[in-house]
Image 1 (cartoon, rainbow, N blue to C red):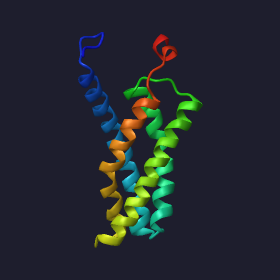
Image 2: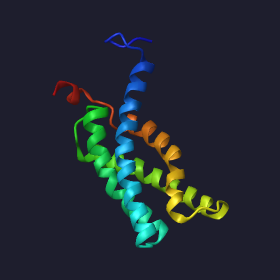
Image 3: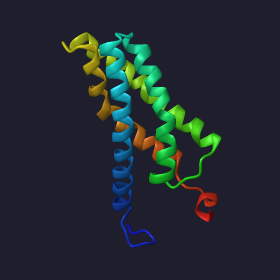
Image 4: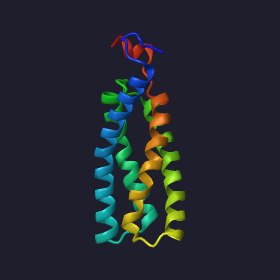
Length: 140
């Protein structure tokens, strides 16, 4: 299946995923750094720390992915949908943290690193749909 610019649908998806992943690396770095500092050095509680840091980084992710990955306009509706996607992803992360805490022998500060593959795939699939360019985006 070819798009208008001669690239296959899979090439377009791969290119978007690469941009999404790059932005994800930046946001994940910020998130994991904050979590590590808070959990290891300030010994804050695991779940509240994970949730609060996660929610703060979502806004940065939304702005960067809207602009660079999906070239989509910033709207309240899209932002709320993006937060909903990331909220469900965060809940997935919390469930996985509880499971990992119960079955793995690692310190708390290590556990958020193990969540990344699961939440990244989840977020990309749903953010791709939520931030899909509309006709209004294409005209601007």
